[in-house]
Image (cartoon, rainbow, N blue to C red; front, side):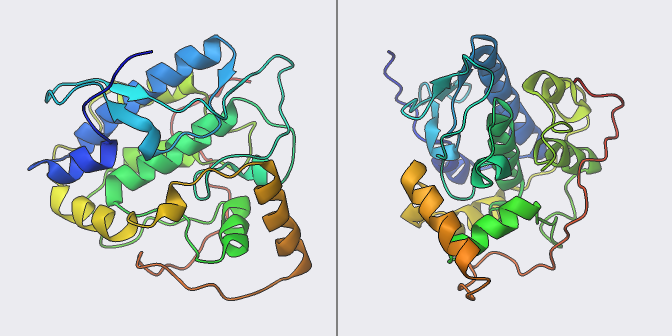
Length: 257
């Protein structure tokens, strides 16, 4: 066990004077490398979120550390079934109460990547049942003007990680080989102003920090099944028209099976 003193990821970004797409790619590369190592050891975190990504020290070049392994599990049999995670970051197969594996962590990294580039979440509704319905369908958009200056490579990277079809979703190893991570596709344009403003606006609510255990998630899913409905209040995030098409089309060739 190590003492980390550098603070949380979002806090550091807000405090920075400059922040670019390249900075986001470097952060995600560190997370992918750590999670890839965990997966090689058979460990699935199951609750990856920005609050669990901490800087080792206050130094400018400090590395990122992954914390809070309270919901993590050894993938002994290759699949798991317990519904758990944090609203907004949990993978659709978990909400669908299907057996799942390491790919749930990759989905969560995709959500984190999205937020790091715009400052608001890809899925949001005050009503958890409606939120889960969005996630199950993979409903997210790259809203203008927030994404206008973000590279196509970054958007493709996110699509590969946030793919509802688990068989098509990238592994950590594939994600590390994507040009946005391994090449020079990430832009050096300063996006600090927009991202920090949206982070401060959208992540003050504690509901984004609270992990869901099995009984809570299942109860919410049962309520959703019993009611088509309810109109939850929308967040301050940009209003968007949702797309439910397959987002997993790759620009990068064949994928691992």
